[in-house]
Length: 202
Image (cartoon, rainbow, N blue to C red; front, side, top):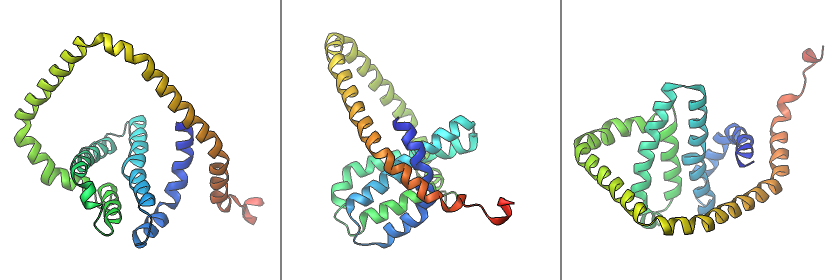
């Protein structure tokens, strides 16, 4: 149900993304909540849908583009985790963040590829052996921890499953209550394009 609603919303957002983005970027008094939501949609939501399409169509070029984006975006999130509270006080911070996310994805700019080739790839290539050792050790410690706490994990599995199901039902109720509004918005946005011309009528 959640995925079906997302598939219905994405075309509507895509059709109006330029107008929405320009208004957000040019409005210095926009709410941070609105801008943070826009950053999530642009930085995570749309790339998820694009990744789905690239996988299903087996588009190797698009898959490489999206893998590059996710690698750069992961580094972006890593850095932001330590600096977001400080940077959020900078005027127009979320406007700048939204602009950067758009720059990273646009085919005309291909910012993610530029960041990857100039900065991320040289850094990871230099430290690859050390990072491999850290990765191997981390997985070994995780497996040891899971092996020693199987009883506790089995005990927590039931409550966690019930919690996840509860969250799913809440989201399902929210989606069902908002679906008529989404259908109406999509219908209004596409009604102009479906009007028959006199030539079509003949």
